[in-house]
Length: 151
Image (cartoon, rainbow, N blue to C red; front, side):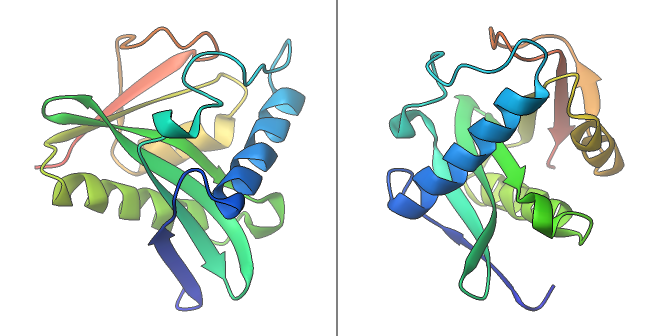
């Protein structure tokens, strides 16, 4: 993991847009019924919050964002790892970095949602101490909602 660099990236940069485009393409392929990034809150970089990328050398291998959900609650969004970089602990490292950023910003809790097709994500979140919670948004692609206390 010492060869990874996790850093904030402008959500409207070419790097961030390329990462999110790859993420959206995977969602379209994996979700039952496809995925339309034109849904509110998906395609607009201004809605991304604080966006981060993970680099290994010159390659961007993952991304994710932290954004305000409520006064003391952050939401983790757009978390994705390139297929060629999976199984190497990158998702866990990125999730931890996003949680640390939420803590740094003063949030006491983080929430996130996911689709039923993303079984690897379900396992990652549970292993990281997330617990299922009630629906907290109107994301048409979400089937599971998770919460974690940061304090």
